[in-house]
Length: 111
Length: 114
Figure 1 (spheres, each protein chain N blue to C red):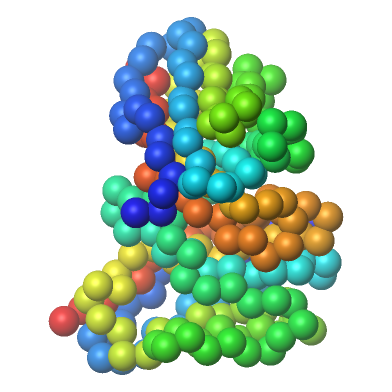
Figure 2 (figure 1 turned 180 degrees about the vertical axis):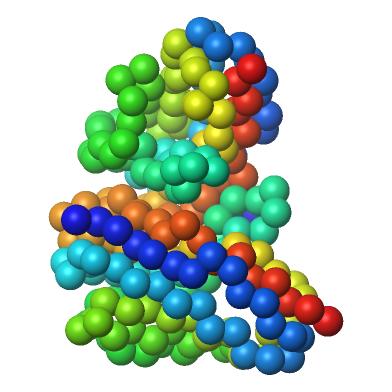
């Protein structure tokens, strides 16, 4: 079945690294995504990883995928107050393009 | 700005009523998706259209319907509204269907049913 789980809350200090974790159940997931939602705004795609990759780095963002454990993580280096938002993990299944989202992780960055 | 527009931004209505939410995709995008974001259900996929045709269906209630017009804009119709339909409704668009085509999300329509 389709299920994506995330921890609900993460608090870090400005300048520290943040690691947001996600687990998914469907092994046929083809693409895994990280979206950011700021208050009152829509969802912004931060990055995505294809299921045959282990890691993807994009500036301050590093995505790690452990396909065996169905575990995805997003690391934000040098976290800034502007990174405070809700972060959603999502999967796209091989048989369609709909996105299945986790519940979202609220990231709070303390200055 | 994602290039996806949604109107109206806010909608307040009463139970039993019917409303229409409108979405204009990014220029050139053929696929439109509708998602519902509520406190108890989270973000849920409702329905997808590709070039005017329904492509995939998710957890969309029978009271809800959607369509995509020849100019590629889409409308989501919600009828016999209930309190539980209060949510943020997002539209997203992508160039095509399937694969890693990025879905660009609109700012959403906040529906409040009183």
